[in-house]
Image 1 (tube, rainbow, N blue to C red):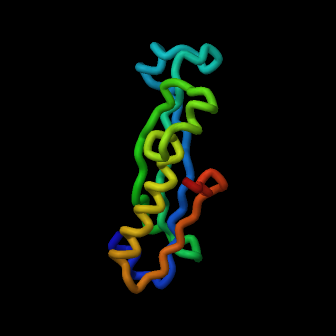
Image 2: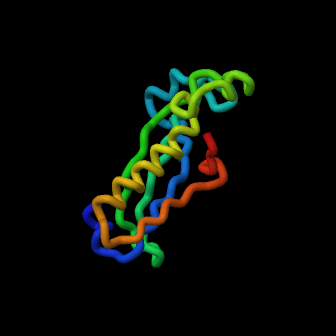
Length: 119
């Protein structure tokens, strides 16, 4: 976060990366990609960059895995903290923390359409 203080504007970009291990000794026990024995692990990092694309670092990200898929009606009944979409609000909260730390810097939080949440 310290590097964010050095710039007038910092973009905090959220995006989710899917990680699926296929080339490690442990991966042999997981089966092939077509067998679908394992679910990917997701990492939604928050990348800090300047508008000129100077990379300032990775500020946040929590590994998670979808263990089971729930029906749409069940998901609609869950609160935001129980849904996968909580990662977007966590990124927004992180942007607030960075803004409090780097008070002279304009912090811009960017997420894709999934981040447009109304609760």
